[in-house]
Length: 281
Ligand SMILES: Nc1ncnc2c1ncn2[C@@H]1O[C@H](COP(=O)(O)OP(=O)(O)OP(=O)(O)O)[C@@H](O)[C@H]1O
Image (cartoon, rainbow, N blue to C red; front, side, top):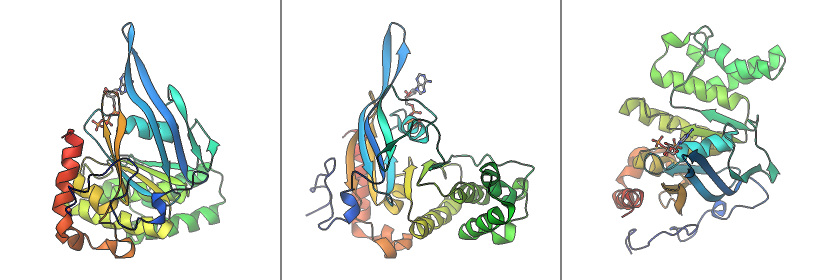
């Protein structure tokens, strides 16, 4: 049966034997319940998000796709605690929160590094704010700088880094605080194609090493297929989840070879299917 014939539906896996994470334990990981967001517009309201229900396993890698304006960033900002929803709740391991929390880390499209601090200084910054003793924060920063492959650039200032190196510093800075969930909002969209591919490899490896939950917004269907174990498609007006699928191309440990994944005969088919889903076809 072709992939297109196996029409995916919300919560239904395309794989014959879905990974255990396909059925997350509702008591662990991240739980979004009936989230809604609306802004006042004249005498009425503009509904940005409506009834978002989502449970993510503690080690999930979910990619979020959807047309511009469907509410992806708004959803991320709510999970980050930056934006208050009009209704619904967000919880980690069943514990509700509504403010920015050390359990939630965010990586944006632009690294926003402190220009006067070195790579190591930037990565250590959050740890210093958290009151970690000097020795401990040095060790922790060094561990995550190594994880993103920037050991030899640890003393450099941001203006001495390439775009990819800046984003790797931002990722190390976020990881160093050891959040339960890492939110990434189109983190590679400002990078050239080659750097982007290399960043995807870094992120895939880091995800496997850290075993944390990654919530990754992208406009790039290929990127979602290369990175996501789970892929969510949103539609606008109001913003809602219309598809929630287990990526049949996900190969766990073997998944670090992007070339092999692209060569998989299902890749093009899935790509087309997702493009159609995003466009509402
Ligand atoms: N403060 C606000 N007041 C009113 N409307 C807003 C506000 N912030 C966002 N919106 C609207 O909410 C909708 C969703 O925006 P959001 O940025 O979350 O979408 P998105 O899917 O992330 O878009 P993109 O892919 O272009 O980044 C848009 O129509 C936007 O105009």
